[in-house]
Length: 384
Ligand SMILES: C[S@@+](CC[C@H](N)C(=O)[O-])C[C@H]1O[C@@H](n2cnc3c(N)ncnc32)[C@H](O)[C@@H]1O
Image 1 (cartoon, rainbow, N blue to C red):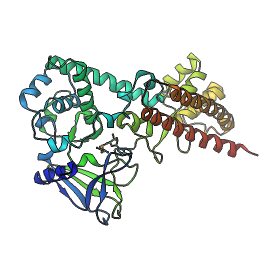
Image 2 (cartoon, rainbow, N blue to C red):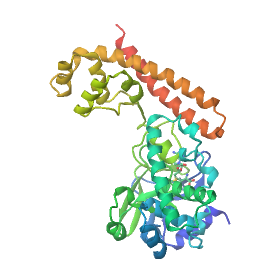
Image 3 (spheres, rainbow, N blue to C red):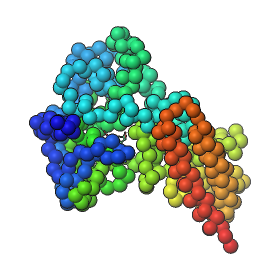
C-alpha cells in the first residue's frame, strides 16, 4: 500500500477526520493537501484529536526525566524523542516525513561558505538556530552519552529540523508545569495536519481547543486546489531560514537595509538613533521603506533640531523629504549592485549543492526586485 494511504488509515483509526481533502505529492513542495471536491468557505476540513498529537506528554517518562535534568528546550526534547524512539507506534508517520535529501533547502544543513552569503535577516535567524541547536545537542549527549558519533548528530539535526518546520502552537498541563517554558516551547507535532503547505494569505483557520485542532477553510476551494495554511506573516528571509523555501508571490516579503544605512552613520549618529530607539531594523517592503528608515536617513539630511522635531512628531518631515528620497535612491542602487555581486559569488561557489545555490540565488533575486520596485518608484515620483 502507498505510504500516504497507510498514514491516512493509521490517522483515521486514531480519530483524525478528513473532510474533502487528501494529501498528495506536489512537485517542488513535497507533500501537500488537495481538495478532493469543491469546498465551501467555513467548512471544517480536518479534525485532529488531542490523543493523536506528539507532545511533551507523549515522551516516555524515563526519557523525559533524563532530558529534563539538562537545559534542553522543548524543541530539543521532541527532536530527541523522534531520534530515540524505536517503537512502531508512529511508523506510518515516520514513512512520509521528509528524508535528509528533502531538507537540503534548510540553511542549517548548508556549508558555512554558503551560509555566509545569506541575506542578513536569514543569517541572523540561522545564528540563533545554530546556538539553540548546539545547546540542545550538548544536552542530549549529556543525558545520553552513547549518542556522540557524527552520524548521531546528523540524525538528531534531521529530527530537530523536522520539529522546527512542522509543529503547531499547543498548551497543556505538562507545558504549564515546565519551569521557564516560553511561548516558543508550546509545540506539538500533528500527523496529517503537518502536511499543509504554507500560503501567505487565506487558506485555513486553525483553532485549538481541549479536544484537539480543527482546520476550517476561510475561502471556497475548487476540487483539485491546494488547501494551505498560513504559518505566519513571514517574509522570505524568515521562510528560508526556518522552513527552507521561498515564494515568488509573498505579500509579506521585505528586505533589511541595515547594511547600507548603518555604514553611512557616524558613531555619534548611531548613538543618537540608539537613544531614540531607532537604531537598526530598516525595512523595505513591497511598497516602501519603514518609518525607522525615514528617521535614520533624515539624521543624515537634516540639522539635529529638525530631526528631533520629526522624531517627536512635531515636524511632518515634508521639508526634508526630497533629500531623504534622493539619499534612499542612492542607497538602494548601491545595495542593488551588492546584491548582483552576491549572486555571482553564490553561483561561483563550488562547495554546495546546486539546489541550495538555486534557492539562495532566487532569494537574492527577490530582494533585487524589491529594490528595483522602490528605485523605479522614487525615479518616477521625482520626475518634474
Ligand atoms: C509543515 S511541512 C508541510 C508538508 C511538507 N511539504 C512535506 O512534504 O512534508 C513544511 C515544509 O513544507 C515545505 N513547504 C511548505 N509550504 C511551501 C510552499 N509554499 N512552497 C514550497 N515548499 C513549501 C517546506 O519544505 C517546509 O519546510
